[in-house]
Structure formats: C-alpha cells, structure tokens
Image (cartoon, rainbow over all chains, first blue to last red; front, side, top):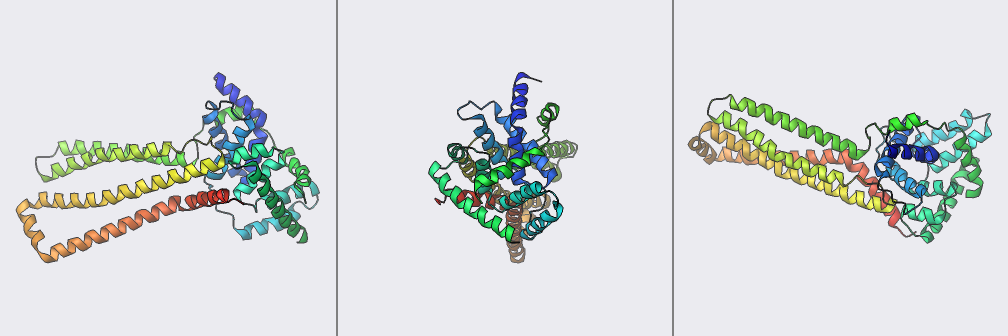
Length: 167
Length: 205
C-alpha cells in the first residue's frame, strides 16, 4: 500500500459514517447502498490528489459523495413508485412493532425520501449540524437561499410527518 | 416537528452502522467504477477494440483475394473502420470531461447537463453522416461489381431511380429514428433528471 493510499484509507475510516449516511439518504436497498458506498469511495480516491485544502475536508467529501449519489450513478434496481413508498410506510409499523426508536428512524427515513434529491442533501446536512455556510458551499447557492429553502423543507417535512402520524 | 427534534432520531440510525475495516476499504480502491461515465467509456473501448479486430481480420482476408471488386470492397471497409476510430477517440475525449465530481452540486449539474447534451449531439450527428456514407458505399460497390457502364444504364431507368430514392429516404428515416430512440432509452431519463435538479437549484425560491 502506498503512502497516499494509507492516508486516504485513514481519512475514509474516520469519516465513513458520512458516506454511510449519504447512501442511506439515496438508496433504500441494502445491496445497491453497498455499491453506492463503494462508488463514492472510488470517486473520493480519484479526487484525493486534487484536494488542496481550500475547503474543509468534510465539505469536499460531501460534495463528491452527493454528486456521485445524485448525478453520477445510475440505479440498477427499478425505480420505486409512489405506491411502493406508501406500502413501505405502512409496513414500517408492523415491522418494528416493538422497537419505537427503530420505528422512528425508519419513519424519518421514509419522510425524507419524499423530498427531492436536493432537499434530501440539505436536510441531511442540517441534521448532521453542518453550518449554513458549509451547506451553501456544498450545494452552490447563497447562505440566504439555504435559509429560505430550509424553512420550506422544514414545513414540508412537518406536513409529511403529521400525515404519517395521522395514518 | 422541528429539525432539532429530528436530530436525535437521526443520530440513532448511526448506531446500527457497522464500519468497514481498512482491508475492506483498501479493496474498494481496486474495483472497477460503476458510474455511468465509466460504463460508457468501457463500452467505447470495447467498440474500438472490435473495430480494430474486425478491420485487421478483413484486411488479412482481402490480401488473400485475387484482384477484383471483392478485394477492393474488402480493403475499403477496414479503411473506413480506421477513419471511424477517430470517432471513438472523440467520444472518449468527450467522456473524459464528465469525470470530475469536485464542483459544488449546482456547478456539477450544470457541467454534466451541458456535457451530456454535447455528447448526445455528437452521437446523433456522427450517425447522420455515417448512414448516408454507408449508402454511398453500397452504391459504389454495386457500380464496381456491375461495371461502370452497366451501373449508369441501370441508374438511368426511372423505376430503379425512384426505388433507390425511396429506399434511401426510408433507410435514413428509420436509422435516424432508431438512433434517437436508442439515445433516449440510454440517457433520456438521466438527462431529464439532471435538468430537473438544475431547474430546482436555479429557481430563486
């Protein structure tokens, strides 16, 4: 293993939770999620030498991970239809009948999957307590625009989750 | 429910995550990429290799033939293939521009949309030139086979000329339609998705 490879693997080791969360955000299927994880690691490795430290390492990682998940990777599985999502939602309560925490996690993931790809990226970073400045830099919009969009996303999530509780 | 309330639930999902060890991570650096661009590049390389192998086989066969129209037809096809390899080189150069994922999401989407449109335009154009080229070659080989005088005589007959023109028109329409359909099937949804995301980001909401 070369010195660069060692440095890179150490970095991924420290931040693999970040990649894992991006995968969860964009892929429901476990196998496809593993493929996406691998693809993100590969894309990070390809860009590793060009990283000059102009931004925070996590901003750089989010940028590449999100670009790969959103626009650089075509899913092998069929597209999930709205009916499937509804079905998934109803199955959550049955599947995790005894474990309220796990059920809440699944419900949150389900609610987030109702958002657009861009909104998912933003809400994920907000949940990870990334600053609006860093979100703006990752997405390529102004901080003010992040603020406006986050208010709308919050509203949208609230609506989705209240509808969920109503079911 | 506020984002703040959701943070606790969000953190719970990391608890079940089993981190990959260093050996697994190192192995990931050795595998082939499954990105759209990597797949396209592999296809282009494959086509290029087949083109060269086909050209080499045909040329070897042509050299064993006696002088005549078949020999020249067999030699002209590898020559055409050799010129055609420039098309693959251009395709690879266009695909190499897709690679970087270093930009922010908006810049990356903008660049990808433009690059993909450029790639599709080149693909369509190259086939628009290629099909008439094949048609012209077909005529040329027929002329060689039947002799120039016999060919001109045949072409002067109105029914042959009309059939040929109708055939050419039909060939062009079907091939153009097939190329458009194939490209739409391969990239249509992906391009629509990229454009939709870019529109979402460019809208000042």
